[in-house]
Image 1 (cartoon, helix red, strand yellow):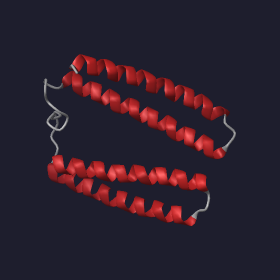
Image 2 (tube, one colour):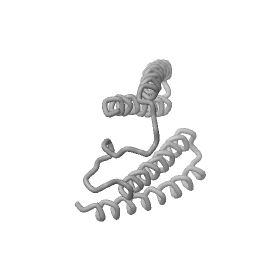
Image 3 (cartoon, rainbow, N blue to C red):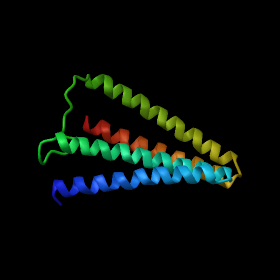
Image 4 (tube, rainbow, N blue to C red):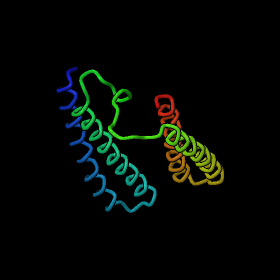
Length: 139
């Protein structure tokens, strides 16, 4: 796939995600069930997050030299790698604490909708932890 085709696909995905944000927000206003309202809010925020990620990818593609990947592309700013490493390690520790806290909350509730929302948060925290581990490997 050429870079132009990729850019076109990403722009199409941004358009779809934008529509999803608007439509889910409308549904969220109309729904009368507390759990459904929370889940729709989660979906809406995820779509908003996807738009920002996709825009970041477009920004990278517009500035990077051909055949350079995201890990190779260096931003123009001075950053002390030791400071960043320590910050990321502290954040990983907080992620670990948040995961443990969520798991305890899940054990203490019998409400299935609440468990599902907490599990969603826990899954995100685990993904965050893996992302930070990957960042640390590449920085």
